[in-house]
Amino acid sequence: MAEFKNQHYLPQFYLRGFERPEAPGQVRLLRSGQLHWAKVGIKNVAAQDYFHSFVDEAGNLDHTLEKELSKLENQFSPALAKLLVSASSRRFPLSDEEHVHLAWFCMMMWQRVPAKVEFSEHWRAEMVRFYFTMTHRFYTEHPEALERLKEERRRDPDAANLDEARPEHFDPAHIEVSVDRHTVLVELLQSAFETAEVLLEMDWVFLRSRPPHFFITSDHPFCLVDPTETRRWRGVGLKNPSVEVTLPLSREVALLARWGRPWPWRWSRGVTRRWRSASEGVVAKINWRTAGLAARELITPVTDFAGASDIQKVFMERAQTANKKLGQSSPGRTS
Image (cartoon, rainbow, N blue to C red):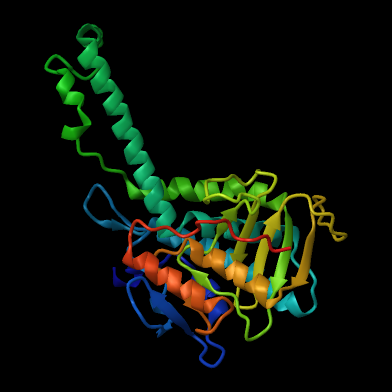
């Protein structure tokens, strides 16, 4: 069905927060491999054909996941809109339920993007290949173990017959490994709901920028980083005591979440929720993080945003050299 073809991995209600000030419904876009910024309608940004759909056993496209995500976005959208409206008053107006919805939204912005899905698919495929590599090696060195397994299978009427199996049949070089994207997506979205509980326990600071120093977004806007790590970026977890989470929420608001800051205003769980003005330097650091994991698209309200020249240069270099990665050194702390 054509109505489900263009599927957004960044919700359109979120993208509207990065509209061009003079052209609602439109953003500035720099795609990987392109040299110039384009003016593009939100409908055609951060989307991929049938990204959340899959082919069922009857050979038909199943859009169930896309429909369920639309329902969830209808819950998330009011919470984000209410928060953004409150930016000028510097209050945290969300109810407990809206608060949870905002946390769910933030974590889904981490888990549902193409880079995360593709990484998970690759990781699962590598685990399967590793299993067959070790199995092949074991049965090659111990063929008697394979014979014992065959005997066990013969005694089990429900087990698959392995009488013709030989060690070379387990060689991953001769096995095609495929991963079901639908299963990966469902698992990632389930993980988003679980990890949202951790995010809710962190202190939140809402950084507010002022024109013309806008925040930007990208195809991978959620950044999880330990700013105390001075070497190459490496994997960190949400419960790392020095970790910082950053996520731009609009061109003028970004979330900074971290552990253990003694702010005076605390939510009912005993953690802080506060607003803070962001200088041009802080906005540039957040923008660097937002662009640091981008592989496909930079999405901005203007082309001369904070940090624009360096970010654009590195993004384009990264597109030209597939093996070159951003983040040779960790981004600076925002405080």
